[in-house]
Amino acid sequence: MLAVRWYLRFGLSYRDVEELLAERGVEVDHVTVYRWVGRFTPWLGEAARPCRHAIGQRWFVDETYLKVAGRWRYVYRAIDQFGQVIDVYTSPRRDARAARRFFEQAIGTTRAQPKEGRDRPGADLPRGAR
Image (cartoon, rainbow, N blue to C red; front, side, top):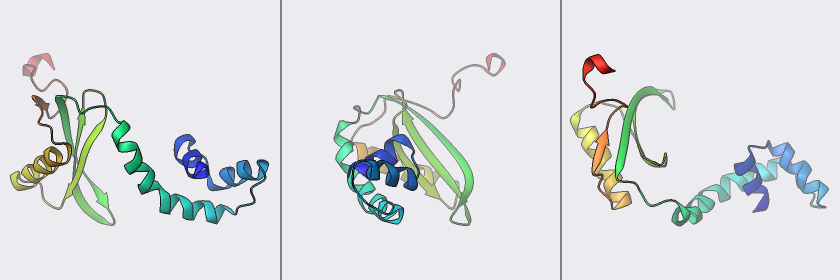
């Protein structure tokens, strides 16, 4: 488990983690570390979820169009005022239905509703002041 944490926290390569473990007397191949990362990363993510900040009341939402698994998709993302990612949603279409689904998913996952939401920084400023 420590090897997976080192890999995720410090951005080390699998071979670097293998070397660190060898210095501590644990003989492991880098492919084994790769398999551990694939197996235990979701578990560590779920274990760390309660340690996150409470979701903020101001959400900043952005969307972009990029290739995901070889297909062009719209990616919606919401972050709060602390910079914590609230939710990410991909959709093949950019329409009101996709936006509604994204917000329903984000609110349902967090059980919190934003008091303020912006789609880009300075969105509330007059056009000449941007």
